[in-house]
Length: 236
Image (cartoon, rainbow, N blue to C red; front, side, top):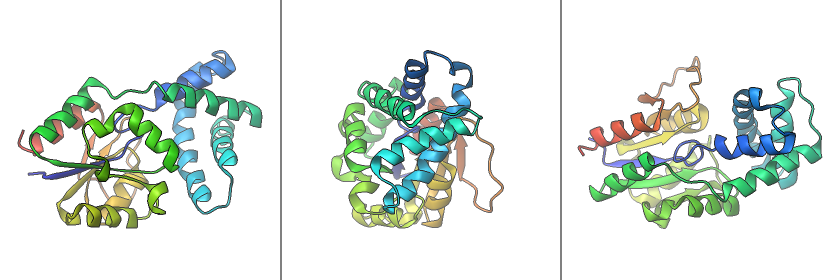
């Protein structure tokens, strides 16, 4: 029976493709709406890759925001200017002010709390921006602030397994008793497993399972599946 559950935020506790879609639609007047799903997938890849460079001090904050968008479009033969890439990010930031967790996710967190299941968060991101999203989503209404770890605050980011060790020590739990749910195979499955945690791959975008020796303990494809799994395995 699961007693401790930790979550990723982006594309786990909410679908961050929605503000991205709206931002791209606004900047390019709907020109790339047909390709938006593919572009979004690549934007997540470049977000993770460039975040590693950003954390290492190799690129500036503006370059981080710019390059991940330019590269995502370039992967499909679409050239956008730096100004357009930054415009997408500015619109994206505005739409992120309106993000919400779904009723399914809210109910899941509420029921986990009611049954005294320990819940927490481990999320990559620039501290100020990530906490802004956390507050907008209302996550502290369900998960105590001291149980929320943002990589920008601790100086270690996924896929470094050390961030999971930091979380386990802070929360006073043994890695082998913890389940971690996240959308990113490398950051949330491989890294967490290497830290000794059990893993739930929330494969919201239906990516193929990579050829790798590490496999998630569970795979779910929708918020409803994630909710059903956790409520069942926590004995609720």
